[in-house]
Every structure is written in C-alpha cells, then in structure tokens.
Picture 1 (tube, rainbow, N blue to C red):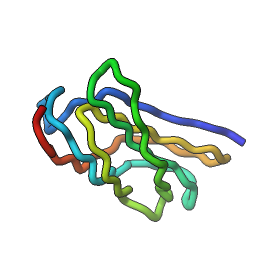
Picture 2 (picture 1 turned 120 degrees about the vertical axis):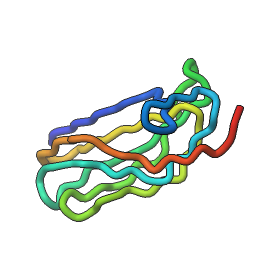
Picture 3 (picture 1 turned 90 degrees about the horizontal axis):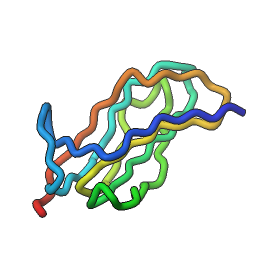
Length: 108
C-alpha cells in the first residue's frame, strides 16, 4: 500500500494578497483541484493554531472522492490555518491547487 501526503502549515491569508496573523479565520469548505484515479479517495484535514510557535491542532479527516466530489465541508477556526491532503491506498493523484471558503470570525 502506498501512502502519500501534502501539507502546508501556518497560512495567515484572509484574501488575495492580504495576510493577517491576528484575526481569527473560520474555514468553511475546501475546493480541491485533484486529478487521478476516478473513485479514489484523498483525505483532507484542516489544522489551526493561534500562534506560530504553537502546535497545530488537526480536524478529523474528510474524504474527497476523485471524479465525484467538488468540495469538502469544514467548521474549523484559528488565527493560522494548515491543510493536508493524504491517501493511504494504491491510487494515483495529483493536487493542482485548491481554494478555501474562509470567513474572518473575529479580531485578537
């Protein structure tokens, strides 16, 4: 069995070309752009932290079925956002990018 993952941590984005380390952000959905084996599952999870030196607290993984799904719903909140895409089965997949539905939920 082949395992693969892609992880990005410490995102402070609140919009195109805007960063904010202080506002709390709520991740409501992720729209992955994944190509690969139709019917294969890539698990997506969101991580949050309130300061750059804190440990990332990860959500439960949500499945994204290649060729079927177009979004993965979440309700995660933090100042810095992380995201992970992972699989642990023998499928081929390629992450071409992703979009997130993020709402600023508060300041400081």
